[in-house]
Length: 228
Image (cartoon, rainbow, N blue to C red; front, top):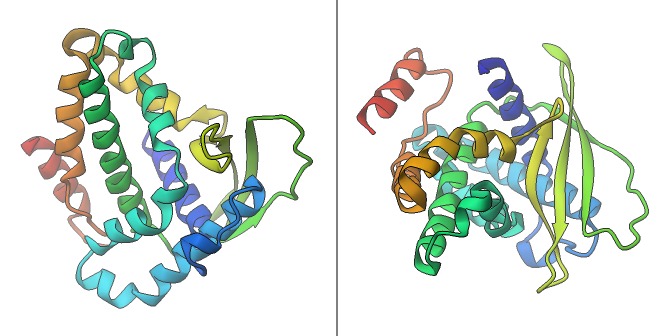
């Protein structure tokens, strides 16, 4: 499991690395392949520009994710996918609160992933023809000299309300990040319901960002988990 999380981290890092050299308004939202590449460039360019400040205050990574990445994540759809059938018994207010908490949880999770960035190289697969598909898979190869290349796929969905493409899932070695999260939360949802999981996500979202180069990084993360 730990190796899988590391791979996901490397994947998310590099994929975001092409999300950082233009403003949100300049990013193409009509082509999922172009969108993924442009967003990645924008995000990592900003990471490089603010690297010194980030090292001094790792919480700035949350701002970068919130401002550069999240506008292109279909987190509402992802949140409801994670809930699955458990959303049927929840009130509209509970669902709204869960979606907001899930968004903040993603921000913290992605921000922590950014601490693993070591200038990995990313190669995107050539764009394919899109007919009437509402969901497409955008393939990416993460090139790291210290390990074999990692192939991942972004699941990107066309928002029926805006007709814009947004990413909502990440698949690495055949394992969906959303599916994994759904399995993790299933027992809690079954026993305690949506409101309880929402509160849990709020606590996890408040975690401080820790750089892996800190000698006591594992201890810091475990300490935060123990206090939740």
